[in-house]
Length: 64
Ligand code: SF4
Image (cartoon, rainbow, N blue to C red):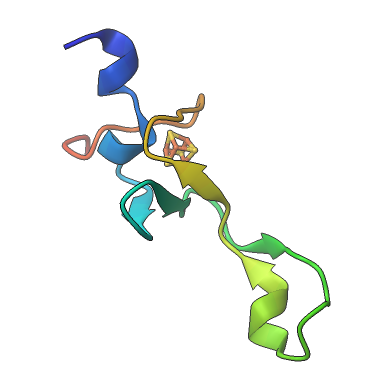
């Protein structure tokens, strides 16, 4: 297994699957996503990320 795969969002403790290819990153609170919907709860979203993406905030699921 390559290091890049080990650090993919799909292996990160902050990742929550949305569908087969994407998930939501819960590293930080929701961010403003626009006011196109009349529902306030739709204005704030966790970032959607690919299973295979990664960032510098990665933490393995097994880390404390
Ligand atoms: S974007 Fe970063 S913190 Fe969020 S799930 Fe992916 S690797 Fe983890």
